[in-house]
Every structure is written in structure tokens, then in C-alpha cells.
Image (cartoon, rainbow, N blue to C red):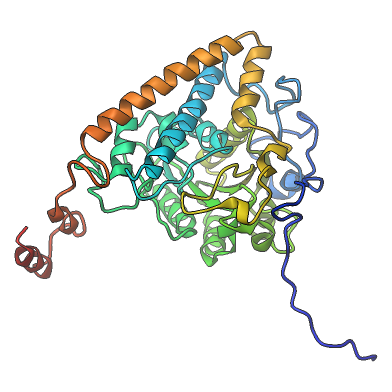
Length: 410
């Protein structure tokens, strides 16, 4: 055989870099309404194609079309828009608060609001989410008190987590929101284990696991898929593909696979790929997967195709690794604008009504912020007691912790 020369190491590169013109020509966006809606008990092998397309409901004219349409009433649609608007306004105020030194850290959801807000409305009380740090919409849409979210961000004396967790890493058993882990990937195995326990106890509650595109490269992802498939765990496994894992584009984690959803095929798990900026499509697909889990039909893997319009966090500068106008060129648009246009097309909304709603929501967010800041912020006001660091770790505090607390004089 002829000499092939030295081996070459391959590192995938994004299509464009800072200073280039955004190019999403390789993102194939099928027409809305063309994707079939299979029966909820469909076999994974019979719906393989749904892992390679994008399930869409809203077309370019703002109309809901196709077999996935109709899962929400008019009132529920209007409520969904307000939830997304609330999350966006909340983000803006907390982002500003971080820049003002009132908290150390913040992560916003800009461009991804539909994913968590719509998914939450497909669940029932008692179901448990195992989220990452970009699913606060689960709390907003679930009615969790906004003041409590801000108290946690500020780590003040009303912080329900007593300052023992990073800002934005909320937790509420009552609202089905498991404590966030900064070590991404753990959510998947925890969600599958919780779902298996629910089935073992003959309960009716299901779990939902959340992960980003980058974290699918973690071993926890694959371990969770094996257990979910083997034991038919009543769980919905969500992959939020927002195209970027901090500064690494999604092609690094995806490898040679065509889509993230397609990874479900190797485990015999039904997999669907949905337009993550289409509130109606997200809800319809979530409802389908949730029903499947509740009927003892096992897990479903869902990939939400969306785009992180803002920075990864307040510690990140996206202009260092992608064009500044990337999010504007994203072909699936803005989830708030798309739902707003749908409601206008149905005669249920208007531009004036939207401006009024923005003002109303902003007033609510500002009022909540003032209430939270009255309890303290990062550098001013009340703080959790140092004594709290010893509490809530063990059911019964062991002797060595009691001694340490006494030595600290708290």
C-alpha cells in the first residue's frame, strides 16, 4: 500500500467565527405542520424519522397548522405568552442587578423561554424536574413566588436555600424543581433513578431530566439512557440544543451523529426533535411524551432546537467566539414574537395590548425586586446565619459537626 503520510488530528470547527457573516444554511427547517403525530404507544422503530426532522406547529404567517396543533386553549396560549414575557423581564432585571454588584452571578434564558415555560404546562403537580440552570421557566410557569427566586439570587436572609447554593440554582420540592447541580449531566441519572423509584412504589408521578447539547458528551448521559431503556423508566429526557456549550459549538458534543435526538435510537428509546422556539410545538411534544411515560410506555428523548441568544452567563463574552448578529439571523426566530404574532393572527392580541402587558409585567417584576432587596443583597442588608451551614446535611447532626459549630461559636 502507498504511504499515506502522518495521521492528522481532527477538531470540528463552527461554520463562522467572530467577524464573519452568520450562516445557518445547514439548519434545515421543514415547513410547519408536515411532521406526523404518531399514536402515543408508537414503537420507537416506527417513528425514527422524527429524530431527524423538526416538529413545528407555527408557520411563517403565525398560524397553527398540522396534526400537532390544538393542544392548548386560547386562554392557555395567552397565559404562555405572559409567562415567557415574565421570564424575559425577570432576566433583564437580574442581569442588571448582577452588573450593579447586587449578586455575584446570573444566567439568562434569552431566546429559550418557550422550552421550559411550555413544558411545565404539560406536567401535573407532584411530577419532578431535574433541571439545569436555564429552566427557570419551569418555576415561573408553575407559579413559584418570584420574590423567593430573587431572595435566592441575592443570598439574603430570606433565601430559602440559606446561601448554600450558587445564585440561580433554585430548589423546590413543592414545585417539582430538584436542586440544580453545576456539574451538568448528573440531572439525567437522578431523573431516571427518581422515575424508577416512582414506578417501584406504584406511584403516578413522572420525572423529567434536562441537559444541554454539550453535556450529552458526559458519561452520565449514556448511563441514564441505558437504565431508562432497560427499566422503561417513566421519564422524559430533554436535550436543549441551543447550539453552544459555553464557548464550544454543538458539533463538538454531537460528534458524527446527525442529531442529538438520534442518539435515542441506539437505546431503543423513542426520539423526537422539536422547534424549541415554537411554544405550541414544545407543549404538544411534551404532552405526548408525558402521556407516554404516565401510561407505563417508558422514556422519551426530546431534542429542542433553539439558540442561546445571550451570553452563557454573566462571566461570558460570546463576541469572542461567534458573530455578534448570530442570534438575529437564527432561522427559528424569537419565541415571544412568534407566539405574539399567533395570538394577533387569531384576533386575541394586539401590539397595543402587548405593550400594555409588558408594562404590567415589568411593574410586577420591579415590585418583587424591591421586596427582595429590602431583605438584603450580596453586599448589603440581611444575610443567612453562618449556623445554617451545619443544618440540613444529615437527618441527625453527627458529633463532629456539633463540635465544629460550638467551636465556631454559632
